Image (cartoon, rainbow, N blue to C red):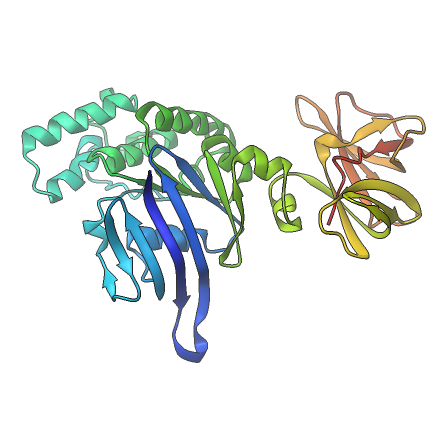
Length: 355
């Protein structure tokens, strides 16, 4: 059963001839107990879509339904205010009151809803305990770490049991190491509590780790949607393929095509790949982890000299550049640091996608 439905949503900034369309007919659903990530580059419309669902932006057309309540209908002129939608919202900046304790921050929404003091204390204690913050109720935000502040913001969104929790870049203010830990915590929390969540992020690794389904937005429209694994392994467009991983991009010309098998020329080297809607001029794409490095000739390989290697801890990232076409480069992972010299970079045809 869908707990949130958005249908053909349009939203512009400005009006008349100067109107700037941000959402261009977006439709989506969120099932009960499901986590959907809105993923995309800056300006793609993902945050605007989240804010429209929350009631913080006014769409021009379309409908938004939460459970059995229609909260926006452009044709009927219906727009329910944000405070009546009862959605939990976690802001990018956390937006905690600096002069209020953790317990007061978490219970503030209940106080506005005229809930009794005893009930507020009970529910605040429960949600703080669920998030491992039970011992921090009397502290102030400045006395907490970034990760603890994030959890307080989540607790405040969860305390009145909203049907949907909206997360706007919830991990972006944390440093790299803490983001990994918080990502795991957030996914475990969502699963344990059976939450229905809509999350905005520009980080594809974060989207794949936390969500059950990804909606990739591009210029106000949904480019592709699906489970994280299918989005990563079966991109339907060049935009999706490039956004969903670390890639090598090779320009080439199509020489022959037989079904989904295609042969292309990349600066004099003939390579076999898998067609994904390629025309005469093509772009070949392959993930870094799919490239195989050989020190002798190999099938479906391009020969390049090593430029440099970068140590990443668990592996080395090696950079190669074509001697006759410096604009053509390939990156690949290696278990060990490679000595200088020429290498054959094998590109498995089923992993070399040609768009």
